[in-house]
Image (cartoon, rainbow, N blue to C red):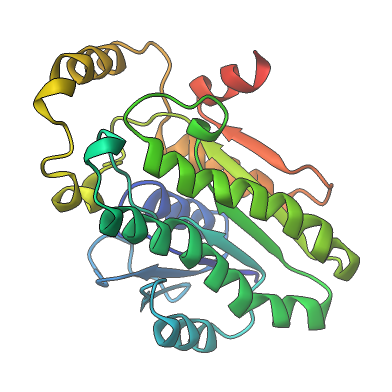
Length: 246
């Protein structure tokens, strides 16, 4: 039985991905900053662990407690809407700590066992905003674009040890609580001078005909985790797939 460690499993993409891998017969290490036993089925093949990717000790404890890992899915992240002009640098750094440095920390923690076994897969979940940036998510896009470049470089670095590195790029998912972890950070990030512009952007987003569902991401992560090829990019959701094709 293979083991997958997934970060950010309390809701959204991470939660659905944990369920998906469990249903496929995998052992799932579902990690959360605040563990919740009620969100996943009770199963001896699911283990819920506390993990804050911004805290080195927390990363070390979770990886050590997980034992041998076959696939790492870096899903934990913070979404943020706001005008960059009004975004405090403390908020910018907070997003980078989770969305960028947290991913890097998790990779550093599992690479040694993958390299020694000459097997393993890292799947980093980013965003279609890196493919086609749009307004009011400049900080978020920056954090995810950094991971795009990091992952592409890391893939070259690790394939000599037979370790695969993949990118899953979800589109816009209005039902995935994109900004749930960033609600407090977004207070005051749409100044009066930006309100009419922001309203037009948000109105357009509510009328999208093609959006990304949680299961779309779970399926893309599953495909990436089980693909032995050197393919790097896996768009998730009809809108992200359309962007790749355009």
